[in-house]
Length: 147
Image 1: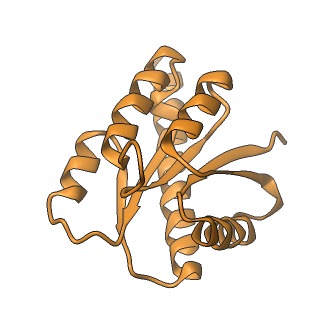
Image 2 (image 1 turned 180 degrees about the horizontal axis):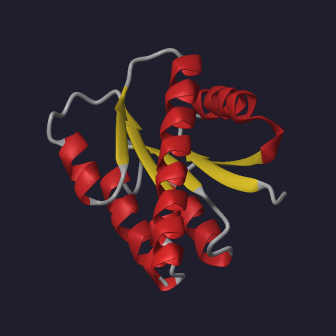
């Protein structure tokens, strides 16, 4: 079984570490977690390793590129590598903007609003990731059956 890869992006070192540990604990040994400190470093890594990640989770408010700008550029990179439909994207923030969930959705990303416990975040991310990939598997099976 091939290991899957998830990227988590947060500019705050302590949050990045805590969320990374919680995600690794929840997803288990079948997943490698890559932690990135900025949207820019994340995009550079994704550009170098196209098609590697099955999920990309990002904070919204970061120095430099914000989460929406990051998603826009990310979507372009994913289209280039023909992996846009296979990558689960999640935007998270504690910033109270009622427009953010819809804006994230328009960019193909799921949205979680904080504050929540770190373990709750990992559980919700895991459930949403699994649901996303199960739906993709079902779609691929139906497409295969039609051929």
